[in-house]
Image 1 (cartoon, rainbow, N blue to C red):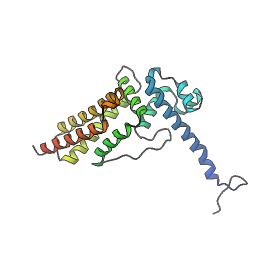
Image 2: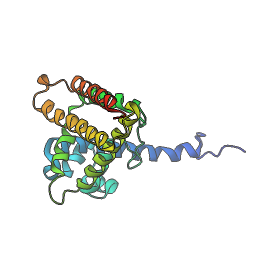
Image 3: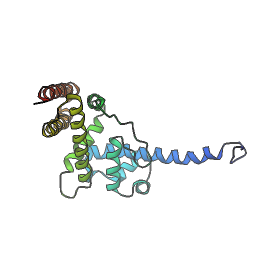
Length: 214
């Protein structure tokens, strides 16, 4: 069957149809990156959609067209930060199994070069504990999923089957990573996040392995 063309230049109609979709995806990703900058610098309540729009090169109405509301943009931005598919922007590949532990260390190292991303997370996660914050459910669910995933991988790697020990170890590791981010934001020269998280993870694995079968 002959290929359908949409103009005299012979460009395939399917290709032409994809271009507006690609432009829409690019615009949405630009808004998500701008939101990360604005909310990271000013917090959610003081971060203005007008400033997000200016950084993304579009109007306030354009931002609302793509994300519906300020609350919708916030949640979309957080999902984007975590590599989830959102608003047509493709998801990043997720790491599973034992390799996830090294992935945690690699992510910390990557974050040490992305101050804006780290600041956005630290500011918004802190704000999310307040009454009625639109990201409260997101952060609560994120921590529940991350805790369960880390606990499962630690059990797989160490052979430890004590659910309380594994859950506590996962919670402690998350606390170390999140707490280090705050210290690093305040004084980056005093804190080597990658080294400390790697050491903490090694010690956690060794302790859980030694307790396996007790």
